[in-house]
Image (cartoon, rainbow, N blue to C red):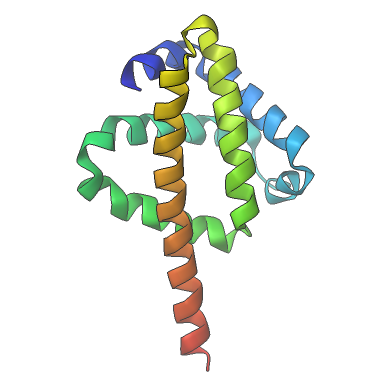
Length: 138
């Protein structure tokens, strides 16, 4: 994953642009989540976060609290489980576009597995946060 990420990083802004265009194309509900967002800044944050995640995959115990916090924050913005599916699809599509012939079944499998793991961590943290909020309010 690190090798393929290094090949995408030089085209970070274009890749992020492709990602958001694809996301909004396949999930019209996602656009509403960004209606007040500066997309230039959001593209920068996307690549900053992905770079941190790729660099931290060998240190999951350190990375997990950050990913959990990200999941809780995304829930506050209205991100749902369905959004994780379309974000994953848009991310994999974007990587395929950026890597071209280097997008092999092995590379796709590695990125898919990593995304699924991280999305599951984010979803679980968001669910725990929502449950604790409901419990606190009853």
